[in-house]
Image 1 (cartoon, rainbow, N blue to C red):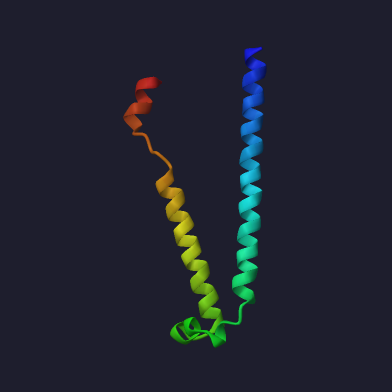
Image 2: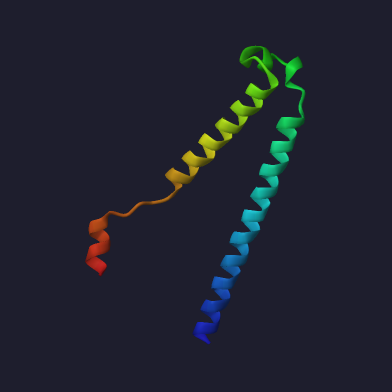
Length: 87
């Protein structure tokens, strides 16, 4: 009974992980279409950066840097010495 419960818990965890993955893939794709679909030439942002392509590129770079930083700082790193003690 214990192994079946653990197996079920692991499969629900995997299902939840893939649900989040697909949700964020969809949100990222939607935001990509929205940012690219806006006519940035008539906005103040385009006057600052220069052109449509530069504005879309800046948005992509900012999104990449923010998500990479969130990913790097959300993972707790354990030291190698702590791992050696358990081996």
